Image 1: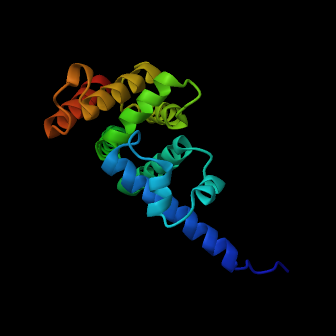
Image 2: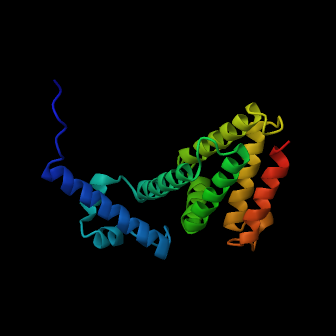
Image 3: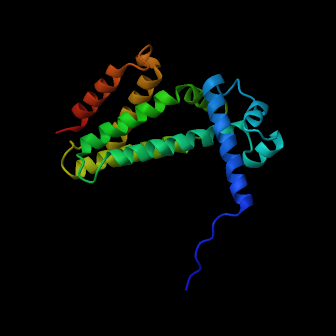
Length: 199
C-alpha cells in the first residue's frame, strides 16, 4: 500500500509564495521599465522581500528574465495545445503555431529585444526555447509531409524560414521594419506558409 501524497508544509508554501512574488515583480517591472532599466533592488522592493532573499531564488537578473519568459512560453504552448485537436489538419496546426508565436512575441517584444542584446554580448545567454521551437516546427512540417498534406520540402529549412519571418515581422525589424503589430503581416505569413507547404 502506498502512502497518500502529503500537502506541502508551511515553509514550502511560503517559499512558493515568495518565488511567485519575485517573478511577478520582475515581470511587471521588466515590461514597464525594460530589463536594462530595472534593478534587483526594485524587484525585491516590489516583491516585499530582501535582495539577499531574492538571490536565494535567482542567481542573477538574467536568470529572472529567463524564468519570466519561460513561464510565459509555457502559457503560450498550453494555449496552442488547447487550440488544436488530434484531427486538426497539418496546415492549421502550423498556422495556429505561427499565430501563438506572434501573440507571444507581441506581448514580450521589449523583453525579447533585451534577450537579443544579452545574447550578442554574452554567448552563454542561451535560449533553449529557440532550439525547441525550431525542432517543434520541423516536426509539425515533417508530420504534414508524412501524412501527404504537405509537399516534400526540407522541413528544417522551412521551419527556420517561417520562424525567422514571424519573429522579424512581429518585432518589426529587418525587412519588416515598421510593421510591428500590423495584423495583415500575420495573414501574409500564414498565406506564405500555405503556399510553401501545401500540395
